[in-house]
Image 1: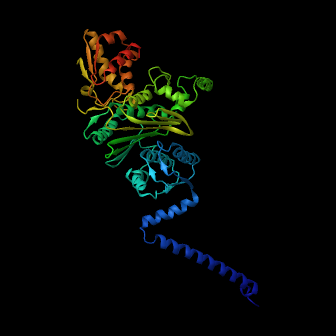
Image 2 (image 1 turned 30 degrees about the vertical axis):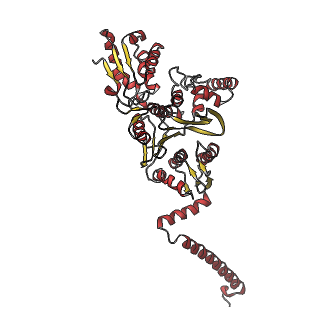
Length: 371
Length: 108
């Protein structure tokens, strides 16, 4: 009797199986030969990163950054990019941040990107990214300490209160939940050495930084005070003798925090809120108009409802109007403010949080360091 | 009790936020540790308390309001008594003198 494996049918089946296995093996060999040719000369760390990147490209959502990553100079596209990241954060989906096309990378763009990616890290959501192809943009990203903070082992927002990344002489990044006036003074002293060649006091800039930290501490988190980090990045430009300050928090934003007053009735709060919104709609064109009134001090608004609160934002605006700081920009919710151009406008993409940028230059008001 | 207070010398070069819980060198802390006792002493001996604001890195509005407005609001000291026994020196920011007087008069 013939063995079962030697019948014509079984021989045909095994030949077919061998053919399929051979094809698979050939494909696998070609794939590995290619990858070895591409990556074989690189270090093990780089090869591992490249391997993870290949995997992430298939499994993660790819989010492309605009060529000019700056909230001040390219607001709409940068906000669109940030909001895509924000959506993925809410959906808890892994992302691949594609920075390859970025040619201009500003300080405020780096800060905003870092603060969003830290939120991914804190939520333990997988993320990865590509470097900008442009060498200057790549160097700027590395110099900012972006990777140093993002890829160390320490846990972030939920546990650590204070975060410091001081990379080089020209750029430093800090985050905290409380108000730190001594830190603001330290950063300003360093900045004034760049701007005026010696230590000076910039009262307008100091007051502005303290008030920004205070606003984040008090209003960014609707549930509890001090629930959200603020992020501050300082960049020094020795050629132009300018110091740039970018400040951001991912709270609810100025207008969202103003909508709910702590003095509202426990049960009638939605009605009271609706009444205020309708009143505003009737009286003011939009949030940009309301912001211009608040900053100029013509309209008093606070989330606490107390008459002796609500002087922080007007004091920051006043510092810019009186030449103590320059180039002030504010972005919060759907409002964009350019103080120098007196431009108050609505933006299409909302920013959930508050972003403030200003500079100090040799024309800004200053005093001797020790009177 | 010292009736000549320099905030830079006697408290901090870097005035901070409004309340103690918000961060160091707050207006509430300054009021509780230094200002309240000093103004009460000045009132009790019918003298003038002088406060020098110069030399610091700047006064956030929240700090000023909590320090001086809090004297009326929380320490329940009569505003007219405070104004009668208080002298503010501020060569660097003279506008602060009127601002503080206004805060005290408005009752905090």
